[in-house]
Length: 514
Ligand code: CS2
Image 1: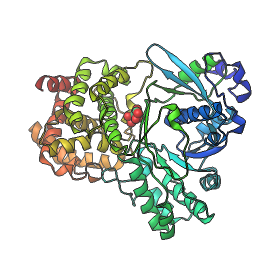
Image 2: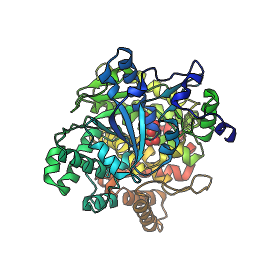
Image 3: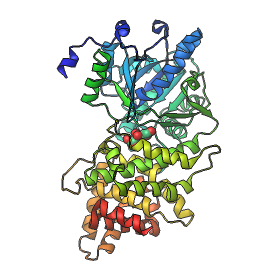
Image 4: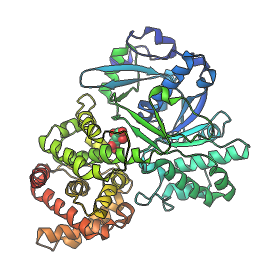
């Protein structure tokens, strides 16, 4: 690393030194003004929304459209200073490296004008949300950032951060608190409503954000509730695989630039962004970067959460258990490839809402290629995080539909069983790992309960059934599914296979049986 750090720092004054094939801002960046506040300025935002915003700004710059230069982004990190610390000396510039198996393209993005750390500068963040130039407040705060109950999508009023923020005694700690108090300041200043744009993988992400934020505001101040109800909350489907940047990536990208970029972002070439066109105060021409505007994004969300994310989660739990560290290694196992293909085609696809014009068979096939991308190094441990927040929309929702239609769901049940097996906190080789999940504690308590209740049962089937019944009784994740005998039976049968034969053995049995 240290030789890399000796390179001159990536900076607007040094763009001319970049190799010719590295794309860079061509618009007059000095004229760029901030119109978007983005909460959660992590790799995904920088690898997705910021790139499309850059394309919109570029397009505006080319035709001399000054209004189009009003969509710069102020990124906000709630707690961690690392993105700010990396980007500040670079005046917000960073590199996006898009990698396929055979090629890499590099682009220096200029759309992020500044990064704030809310915990350090809460007043500045609240003021920025309440600034007259702010028209959109967007979010990628991950599923758990919504402080909702994953099974119902309602505000979790027992969440510690929410309890603290509703009390209003100090600065907010949650994204929901920042939105509410920033918008209250806007209301007090007599400014107009904004668009609140969720870009997280939640079911009906815009509707969910609206529901939790309005519930929060109602508890704080009824007038604020009514004012916030005038904002718009479009649902969006976001898609691009963006793994966590590694030290090797930093070194590789910096060498290619000939300049030190402390925190580039790595992504796959593919991306999709489907947005409901309901903006309270205007928007960038994101279509210039390939965003699709629709009246109802929900069918696209369902497609993506179930086929892309559902498959990723199943591969992640199996991968962690079997010791396959990245998705491309998981999908390279013939048994996994057969399993995921069949799970998508036979169990998930029939649950999808109609999507006129979409060739779902081709979409499925393209996913196998995306998962196989060897240049991404997408770690199974990264995807496996926060399962309690992901499993409901990725696996449990299609299972509910299969049960309602009286259809089998053996493979999806194996996916859920793999998560339960993962929650034990050790892999098939006996290596312990930490379960990173906001509900890790209550889930561990339920797991321990289940083990206690079933330990005296000698028959494996009865034992797994008892265990699964206890665990799936955990309503914040499973809702009422734990009361479904067919659900419990299926998951128990798959958990029994995993316990007895490991991931590979369970996969070959399921692949052969069906
Ligand atoms: C992944 C997603 O970490 C995860 O949960 O499943 O980040 C996934 O890579 C993206 O949603 C793809 O668009």
